[in-house]
Image (cartoon, rainbow, N blue to C red; front, side, top):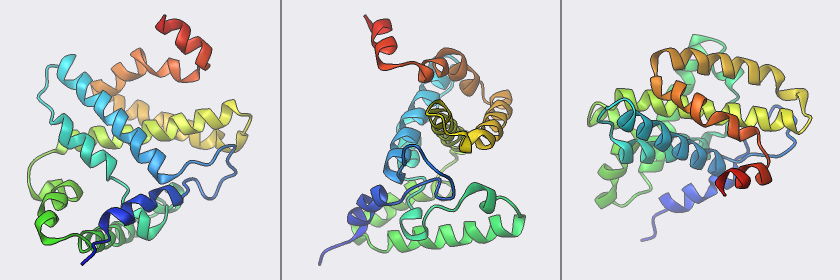
Length: 201
């Protein structure tokens, strides 16, 4: 028997994000999940090294890589729609959970429980703080995208950039890792390749 799970995951590259907006450069789900994984790694390392915490770095990064996997089956629900009303948010969460369960059903039995722990970590252990950092990484990824679009002359992303930055600033009040990342790393995202490599020399 052939199982479909990993073939389904490979279809992340076909799901475009920001579908309601004109994009100077399209971003797909695969790119987004990789970036959220990298940013989660950074935030968790900052937490452990600068804030002397004991965060589960590897588990958090793995969760981040899979965090939007349900969208393979549901598509990307635009944020303004998803969070406009509490009823919509609740309904979408239910659809998302059902999509994740459907994805899990495409695994062989010997992998199901292992992957279930990635999709639904709350069923297995307390990763509450790490989950907050994943959400922060998700917002940082969105802000990076908005700023890239603005630098490309696309004003379509102005409102999204402002609202996303405001949300990140709110997160930074309770998550010192986010503040440290903004202070130590964020400015580099606006630089050219030549500028970035000059600093590396």
